[in-house]
Length: 248
Length: 202
Image 1 (cartoon, each protein chain N blue to C red):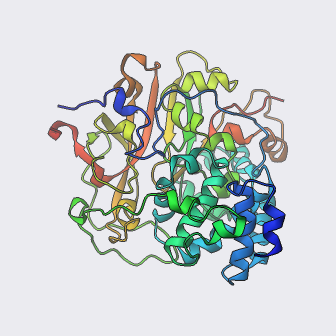
Image 2 (cartoon, rainbow over the protein chains, first blue to last red; image 1 turned 135 degrees about the horizontal axis):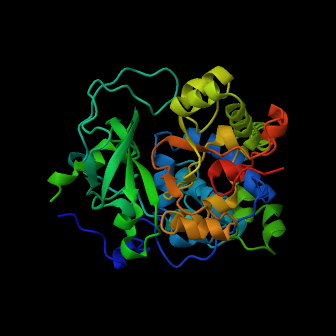
Image 3 (cartoon, one colour; image 1 turned 30 degrees about the vertical axis):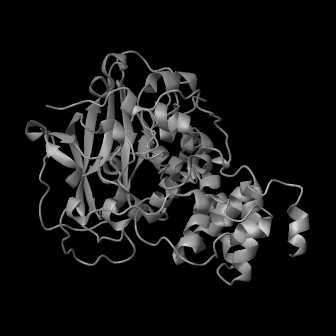
């Protein structure tokens, strides 16, 4: 039996990640402007430029920076100047976690109460059970920095297969969006294999996976509220997936 | 305390603007950041990268059926042969709009975007409103953004949840067959390559 998430569980819940926004309700119109510039103010520029040097000394593993953003407090995620505000907050988190800033050092400098900055509101890195992850496997060493890997084993699924992702009860980083969990979709394409961010973000090895593009019909995701003739395609790491007939 | 404290005491010490300025000064002082490299990076992303890179590929695909076929089948190989490289394009898939099919791209989990083809993403693309709603009520969202699709058009949403990045190949506007590549590329907006608009009809 495949169980759809109930309405309540598809809402912003916090415990499964404030970042996992797909399909959440209660939002207004998209603040769209066709000619929007890349940066709106100089501090956004500075944050962008700083990030690359900060990352070189902190979050170097695939998924590590994204996971740090996911660990931000709700206030810092939504109400701290948007996207580049999140980047500013996450630099503080990473620089303290990696020991480049003392606890509360930036608070002191800006005249805030010590220990009131984003680093003190962020959740710590969660402990992930390596036994819940797929086995690691050796792949040829790629030239240059890339998350792509060449796997000797073929994918377990083929284009046209019905699959379902049942995960989402483990802690920590994942690239499985809540809104497709438990819903049957169809494999439409197989992308190049990649290291598994669920593992690398937690420093548990590469555990590379085939990446499958899975198509979901809107009516399977949203029921009677779904718009007609809409297909949502989501790229999923192979270990997230089970053959739909075998799902229990 | 330094004079920096006086300088900031009128403003909110929690604001990202204040904290960014203080953080940069601190990281430079600690020798962790080279300010000139920060400047150079900003300059490159703000001035050398942008939607014109993707637009040039789209215009070429409109005028050259063989190029279009290769772009849709194996964009990575085409980008190598075209000398396009850079951040956030480890693996690119190009999705063609055509009669009866419209494509639109999102990243619901963060804000993944093909930087080296389109430059840095606009805020609306990274907004919770877009990320939440475009997978649940895409036709309504597109209408609000000014794009009404013909009836009987299948709408395909691509959620960038792995390191694959997507580029939409918009349809060539009618009556533009005589334009050269440069003029065609001017019709290809950023929005049309994300899939929230059509290419401009001149």
